[in-house]
Image (cartoon, rainbow, N blue to C red):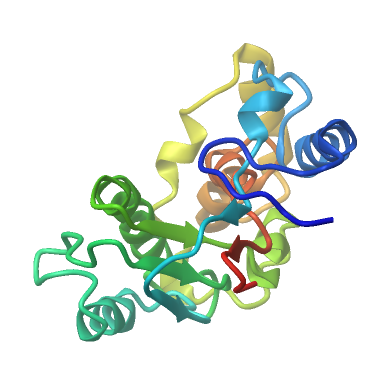
Length: 208
């Protein structure tokens, strides 16, 4: 089957099956049972037209300074972290998390560039890696000492009273310094909901 490419909702010749399987599995793994979101809100685009220039960056692992350096060398951002890449498509291949203290800075930087990149005719694609899935599964073996803090916003966003009580009981088993991060990545948490919108792979033209 010859694939069709378009911007907007992702295309698949078996659209109904894809939507049902993808959104159901993603909601089960990432989202709280009492989510108010519809399945359509979890759809993510995975097919894109041909791009003049594609830059791929691999494992960032919580090092925002190295990420900034890579993006500047590639001509994608300036010294103020503003998009300068024009129509370039940046693909971050996952594994943003673990092994470094500035994971959230990496995530915030990449997502902050998306709107400006699209306005310039480019794009920023952030893919899921195994370390993102490990954190949603609360496998924190590679979290560094300085990476437990900074996730407090996750505990105040989304859900009602039931969700907040569920969060509180679920966090009891974690030491106090780990609870912010654990709440962020548990199903329905701020980061779990963000990761649910990230694909595991994309295709840009003929490049997979």
